[in-house]
Image (cartoon, rainbow, N blue to C red; front, side, top):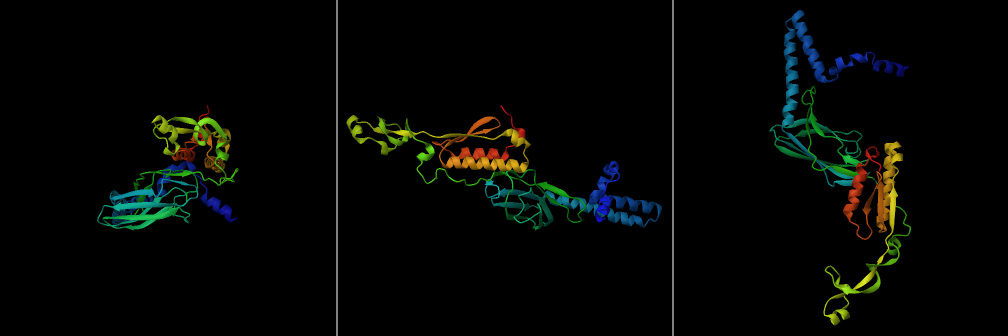
Length: 332
């Protein structure tokens, strides 16, 4: 019974008229309506109603201009102690607000993306009680991003409706560098174990020239060669530096593909889980010094090479996974 009553009270019986009365949803709309009503009362009932009109007009003017003037002197900046992190990893957020006016600013607030609010808070709106005049205030809190992506997802604004709350004025916050949240990775069981010889990961030795196996011959010294490889007997005989050549390991290569069609039909939660699995596999391959080739959007891209693994390769790969969407992919 109560549900039916609640549904009837919240039902829109005249949806066609909503656009004509939508302005009443904002406090300033009721102030304007009260002002017009007092004008009508002054004209047709009693001239004393004009005093009420003057008071309402004063409240409307002050309540609209003061927030706007206050925000002209407010500047904010949002940053993090690291520009990259994983899902569910705690990171420190810093908000710096500078007030250029000699008087304090009250009632400031900002709305953050889900996952950027202070840890333990259910709401994404942060309220600031007071910013002193001619001062710079710093606020820090810990946050735990729940999902991959780039934050903030939309422009962040400082806003205030002080003193009467009838009109809201805002100012955008500067974000020097966004926060990129990578998919969370899980430590997999090693097979073979990581504590075993590196040759389990790189494979058996080959006849190619490298730095891992037995000596295969000698050659003249080249800039960059280690002095430990110098063959001193041959060097003394030829009166020129001669170094040993050694065998190279036959590196293992792995191709990992993600089914883009399945990813397109998956829910956001399932897609995030798929990318977490992909991230975990790539991380495990890197631990064993294997070369891996990732198939995304129909293109094979190298995220790491066993012999010359560069951390920037992994960072670029994880950045792409953080922002990747199957809807924007082009299969070739």
